[in-house]
Amino acid sequence: MTADARPPAIALMGPTASGKTALALEWAGRLGGEIVSVDSALVYRGLDIGAAKPDAAERARVPHHLLDLREPWQTYSAAEFAADARRAIADILARGRVPILAGGTGLYFHALLHGLAPMPEADPALRAQIAAEAAARGWPALHAELARVDPEAAARIHPTDPQRIQRALEVFRASGRPISAWQRGHGASRLPVRVLKLVLAPRERSVLHARIARRFDAMLEAGFLDEVRRLRALPALATHPTPLDLPALRAVGYRQAWEYLDRLEAAPALPAPEREAAFAAFRERAIFATRQLAKRQLTWLRGELDARWFDPQAQRAELERALARFLPRSAGA
Image 1 (cartoon, rainbow, N blue to C red):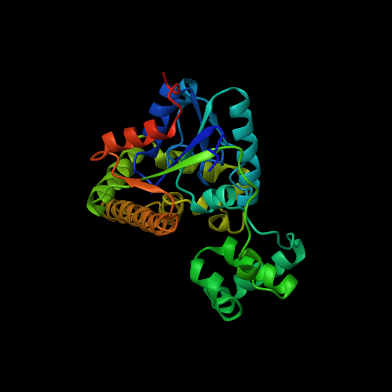
Image 2: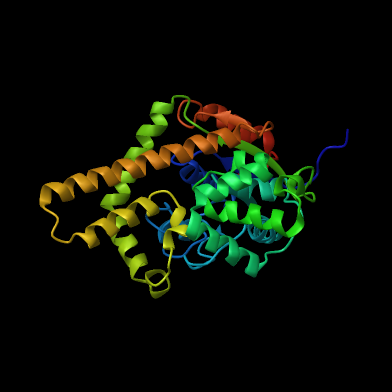
């Protein structure tokens, strides 16, 4: 069998707070790599602390790609990501460097590695009609409608995910064909790299939960709530009729912080004990939502049958051996 002569790329996948960013920075610095973010929150400007976006010092150490591409009131699709990521990979290869794909957004990884099916283009009028129905009936009712016409898609889409519910119904109403049928059996054109797929995930779920809580508390100390206040002050968000339906503000932590600040704004004279209780409830909701995100990410990752799983702390030596076997002997020398 002929050896795969394509240059190498590394995919560091895993649930939130599993240590992907730190390892990507370390390996990129050692191997002469550049990082391609595979994270749906990091594409939005202004989502910095709560999205754990690499800071200026980290970006100065290692080039990063696909950060700060959109304003938080704009949308960015998985298809756009796949096209942008392919361009970034090509540019990195042209510089003789190693692409390191790091993130936890399964849909983005799927779009890049496996491709997305061609399907009907967006129909603004139909989309507005569905949004009006949602305002009148609620997104759970539209999710129930989706379950009737496309149970396969409804099983994958959460009832509180308006963007994906809307798109699935839009495709069905425009074409008469379920979106799951459009998506089935489609493959991506071959990437110009051979990819080592590594999943970073602590063996014990309690370890990941503890990391999630510590990281969220660190975000609070770093000024996360002030960051959300700045977002709320942006005219395009302050005047938006349903800001929490925007993809950017569905990022874990941001929705819960927005709702917490809504409560404080509605009751500015809230007694101190009630304010403390509201803050504690907000913190718990945000941490719980992040745990639920990690659970969904792990579920998706189990479907990546050619990915290798490692506990990033307990199996660091095994991780290094997997990297050494994959890369040419001269890499990182």
